[in-house]
Image 1 (cartoon, protein in one colour):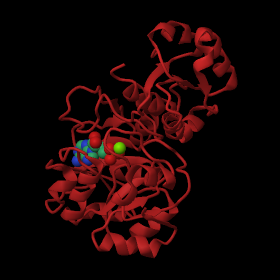
Image 2: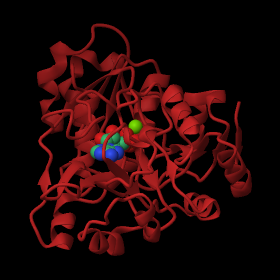
Image 3: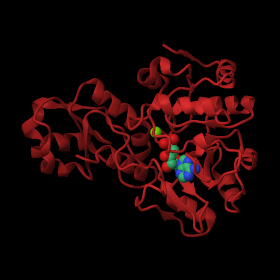
Image 4: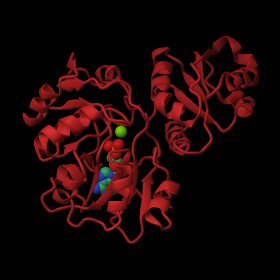
Length: 331
Ligand code: AMP
Ligand code: MG
């Protein structure tokens, strides 16, 4: 099993030598490699089983590093970076010629962010360079939000895991593309579309999901546990899915409150003996914080299904709903 530590020096040594580190950030744990080392970056793809055309986000120590990765710094960056970095916002811009093609997936754009986690920032400052870090899980599966999740997912395929405790946000960063004519949000996260519009003083569109070319890696099916996910807008809708649930195995129930749990239980009264309550997660922030841990728990309990009462789309709730929709796509 990989070394699990809080030793930043050890992590920097591994990264300088071309190794891979499980890196805590405020969103999810990353599988970090020195972004200027193509061989190390290729290993990230191999370990994850990620298609090489899905570009990686470059994590930077601070906004002053952007010039080393961008061909030109978008005018709109300053207001976003001042307000939101370090924080869960990734910005896509035209890439500098020397950015390895492994990082950009061969595109002419690069995605960068400054993460808000003291250990990640300390590693980045000591390295004084960028780290390519997608989530530290196998491709298509649930992102890790604790060091233990990383070890469980990747084992010895990661050289060292830096333990920074549970991730504060719990879902992946918001991605805004500033490389085109108008700013476009490619993925929702804790930073909302409304917040971005108001900081930029212009309308910001949310990418429709049409066309893989626009946002490679934003697959319809992603973030999925082994159990089949059933997403409900409201607990009362549980009656409508009763007949469609798997015929065998335990069914986990995840909701914000115990009241909603009880409503699902009464909606699925005929299946009472198969239902397993997961601990309620509270409002949108709590949902984001605990979502992946609960989905993993459903898998550990060998549930065949997870019924989730989604949070309202306010704040990070929109991102939680997006991840649940992807996790349940194909049902
Ligand atoms: P993650 O899966 O959290 O590592 O986030 C990576 C995602 O960011 C990719 O799947 C893309 O959708 C997006 N992304 C990263 N780099 C670029 C880029 N150069 N151009 C457009 N989108 C990008
Ligand atoms: Mg991921």
